[in-house]
Amino acid sequence: MTTTSRRVIAIAAFLAAAPALAACGAGVDANTNKPYAPTESQVLIRDGQYGVNGMKVSQAYLLGPDPGGQIPAGGAVPLYLSLTNDGPAPDVLTGVTPDPNAATAAQGGGVQLPVGTLVHTGTGANPQIQVQGVKAALRGGESIPLTLKFQNAGEVTMTVPVITRNREYATLPPVPGAIPAPPKPSPTATAAGESSGH
Image 1 (tube, helix red, strand yellow):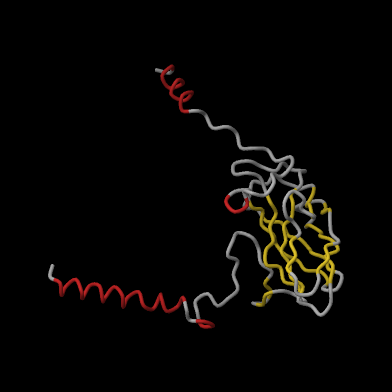
Image 2: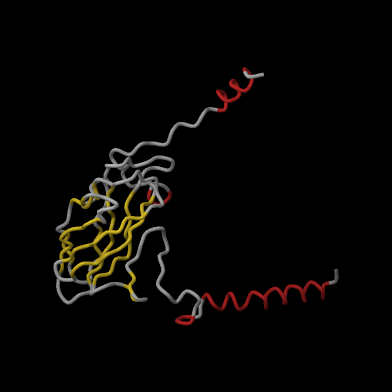
């Protein structure tokens, strides 16, 4: 292959990639000009707008078990929220109500939401809100509809995902009562079992 042929191929490859590269920096006309969730957690978006009644939820998830484990039916899971109050006055997250087909109750509330301040309901070992009495075992990947009740912003309903405790969530404390994944058979035990069967 000649040097000229290589140049022609390189230029053709660059021109073919140019539209895709241009879309990355196209501002309001970009392919991703709609709000989206960059992680597995949920973002509060209604009718294409971020937030409802001045309340913005940038992250919402229920922490589930470690990979391969489960939260048994009747168990509880912590709710992690990241909220910003863009309303005209301070607000309070007074409580949370789960869909009765998914869980029996939620404990916690009274979360103060000053204007323009990002507030997290769960950090470290003490998440402020627990969804209790889940109706079915949770392994991660499920969703539970929740109604967030605010003193001023009113009621906001979201469908919140259950996320397994791994990757960026692995540093969070384990969910009490979670059943771990069953142990994997060791390669030695498997080899011994196969050899005894012959």
